[in-house]
Amino acid sequence: MHRFFVPADQIDEKRVVVRGSDVNHIRKVLRLSEGDHILVVDGEGRQWQVRLTGLGAKEVEGEVVTEVSVATESPVKIVMGQALIKGNRFDHLVRKAVELGVHQVLPLESGRCVARIKKQEVEKKLERWQRIAEEAAKQCGRSKIPQVGPNIPDLKSFCDQVETCDLKLLFWEDETRARLRDVDNGDKAIGSIAFVAGPEGGWEPQEVEFLKKCGFLTVGLGPRTLRADSASLVILSLLQQRWGDL
Image (cartoon, rainbow, N blue to C red):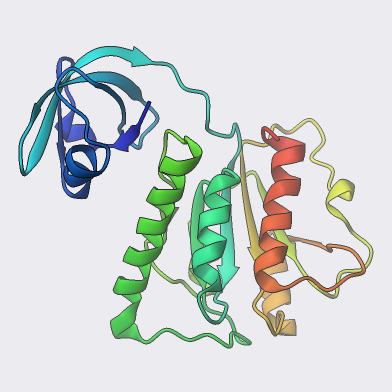
């Protein structure tokens, strides 16, 4: 059954209204008709089976048949702090991170970032990455749309935003002793994790010291050098395997 994300204010107990680009997709691409059924997701964790009752040029209407229970969200909320990387690789990274169950993606500014985004382009970039996150969430069957942003913070601002996370990890290319398997959370339940991964040029020494002071544990990823975008996907997989649902 085809799935569509619809804002919660367009859904009530009996009726759903679909607007925007999905209207054309329903009418012209999928060629659905009155009486056909779709799945509607509010992006906040709830999902309904809906029977189409009207297909207009600007909106599609449907009646709620039943609420469908979903269990596609990871039990651990992972916030990924990824230093900006060059080219369109951040697009790919956002898409795959959503598939791996990330809760939030925060693009970071750091000292050795090759990629730089002009202030007047920040809003457009974040909007693009948010669209990619929504498309990926729809494709992989998630019930929530991860947030990208809402800004591109420096490290201090990032640390402020993730201060209350249960576990904070700095994946650092010069860490040769500690691995993720060495992290001991004792009896503490891990419900939220924040991690930071560096750009192509790695972390500057003062950045590492600052993150340590903010409570981040340094962790390595083994003897081989991974590309910046590969590293974050490996990290997400490892975190989901240990504390999530992989």
